[in-house]
Length: 278
Image (tube, rainbow, N blue to C red):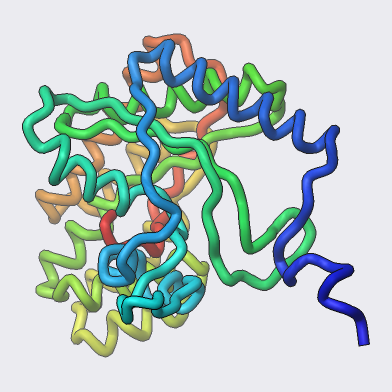
């Protein structure tokens, strides 16, 4: 039997000097780039109340949280992502701060994923948040900041995959699908389990038109933003809230283009994240 004194916990790793220098370099560039855009750093605890972290993270991610009871009997968890903690901070200690509020965090996160090449249960993330603005300029700014950061650390041959959750939610809401069921469908889409997502919609008594719209949206993707946007408009032309989301997405793309973004963009209408706060 291998001694626990000779190995790291499964899914964890040591950083040797060269790797540690590389990590600190990336963190430094993340901070410098965020500050260049006017963002302020905040540091939140690695441990938060379980209820806070579990509230909107999605069922699949809830299953992968490191959860335990502290010596005081409180149910707590290691943070699996930053946004819940930052939202708590903004809603409390920064509630009266002038908006829009630009914040960033750099640090380690924890998820009980299956370890594999390039994936560990402790991982590092640079997180940029802009609160208090629903304008398309806010989304374009985050993408521009991220692009600037990735280029500075030397990444090449990458693209941005962009969708708008409002397109899907607009269709679901028009069908009368409740938020909980919408979140379940989103989680299926996030895992690219298309058939399961369609089955959930059928269980929710969705109309044939709605099912056809979703199927068509799942196929609406490409690296020519203008043509994909045109295709999405045709698919959701009878859903006002979905159309509104499409126009918002188009404005963001126009801003990125006029701002000189050179990085390729992949538009994917069926792109959904399993995190419920989206």
